[in-house]
Length: 231
Ligand SMILES: *Cc1c(COP(=O)(O)O)cnc(C)c1O
Image (cartoon, rainbow, N blue to C red; front, side, top):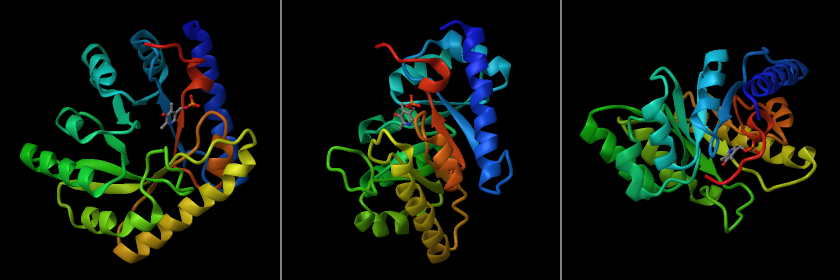
């Protein structure tokens, strides 16, 4: 897609996000856009950054590091894909926010790497609310020890929760999952006395429903950049 149509689509998404927030009685800027640029070329990211989009989400560590090397340092990068423990060394300190923390083992490994580098890494916990076996995300039942660990880590700053609900054609069917994530965050806030300000939920097909249910970060790729090819 040419870059002016990417920018037009991006502006449209921002308008739709603000409208969804207003419908829910929220401030129009209370949900922020993470532009998901995986499998899209660096020049499209640069054009959108120059138009005013500050945050980009990537799934694959090598691809993301390659883009970081050639794009402006001011871009804020988020890692949204499944993270394997053997990639931890390459990601800590490079991403403003890691969305996919979903096991105690991964959290420990991130903590150790952040400690070794003497920095604080922001993270979200990805929750698999529907307990879908083939998908990433921690099951709710397994959350307490991970939550305890993150609450006590001085090198990881736990910022909230991330969700990939089951796929539905009708976004209204994802709503109960969005609402449940928000309730879970409320419970954890009270239980641990943490701020947990971020709810990362909503994608191309369902971001308006997600904002109506409380999303603070929506992760949108296709709606902005068009269909993804292979890289
Ligand atoms: C690819 C991806 C997105 C963006 O999906 P679109 O449907 O293209 O908006 C959002 N979140 C995660 C975790 C992804 O992997």
